[in-house]
Length: 354
Ligand SMILES: NC(=O)c1ccc[n+]([C@@H]2O[C@H](COP(=O)([O-])OP(=O)(O)OC[C@H]3O[C@@H](n4cnc5c(N)ncnc54)[C@H](O)[C@@H]3O)[C@@H](O)[C@H]2O)c1
Image 1 (tube, rainbow, N blue to C red):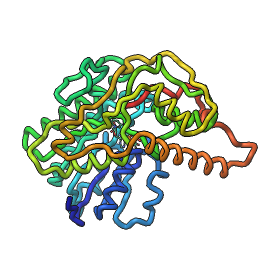
Image 2 (image 1 turned 120 degrees about the vertical axis):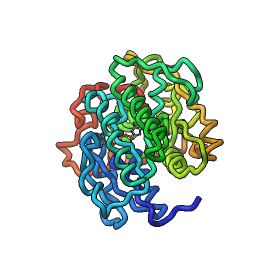
Image 3 (image 1 turned 180 degrees about the horizontal axis):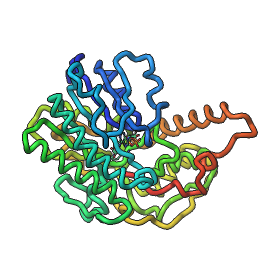
Image 4 (image 1 turned 90 degrees about the vertical axis):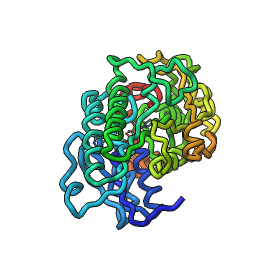
């Protein structure tokens, strides 16, 4: 695949978990990248290694506001707009549900207009949550979903559904070229320890010797995609030159029970943590597995990183962060991650995000 050097990408949500890995991958391909983020869940730490990178710049802004003048003045020319801006984990997106909904709807509206003004190609990071608690398994792109429009997850799920609608209307109106990725659970280094996702929960609890919390019986299933695989899929989708313009599932179809994931983490960390069970939160999907036939056929994409390999890399990352944090604190101030988050046990630890 050829990548021209003059490509300039805007990555909205660039300081987040996936956005920062996408930024690294685009820079590695010789592109210039502008990150845009309001740091609601993103962290400067995720981009600190790019401080001296001349092909990278970061703009602090909220996508619910009109794009900053820097992006609209005549000297600025974008070739690609990736819209990843949106908190992705339930405790974070439910903390301010109205802002979450507006981020997907108003933010996507603004970024589509920006893409049109630059004649730039647009990609929306949508989610498997558009399928809700699915009645069809595995989930194919043709499935319209089973979403509760009034529940606590609706600000995220319905926001993404509306963002998809805006994107397809933009494309149908011939305002510009646009693509939609439906991302399934993704994991890897730079996930936040406090984000309430099943992988980060299990790893942080295992590393600190706490019980590993499972919500429900643990028989609910998820499929986990390593972040490098996902980023490769996003780039392939953005660069795809064929005719296919429907939404595309990107995720790893290897499905396992949440309790099996916890058991793998226990094995790989060598922890003595026990597994403890809590009630399942409202509207938590019972089964999740992407059908990625279209991604395979249209993009030639298939995940490459097996779960134990990705988990080992993620565990190493969390262990390194924990060691760094511990080394920076005087002994008397060392506290557990849970204490640092200010939350009672389990409060920040909801179910897997979409
Ligand atoms: N991680 C997953 O498993 C997963 C699954 C499905 C979809 N997605 C989607 O992928 C994208 C990235 O997810 P992530 O896991 O990296 O989450 P993340 O929370 O780490 O990243 C989201 C980024 O967007 C920024 N942001 C949020 N609202 C914003 C706003 N109004 N204006 C500007 N910036 C804003 C945050 O500060 C953060 O840096 C999201 O759109 C999410 O919905 C992720």
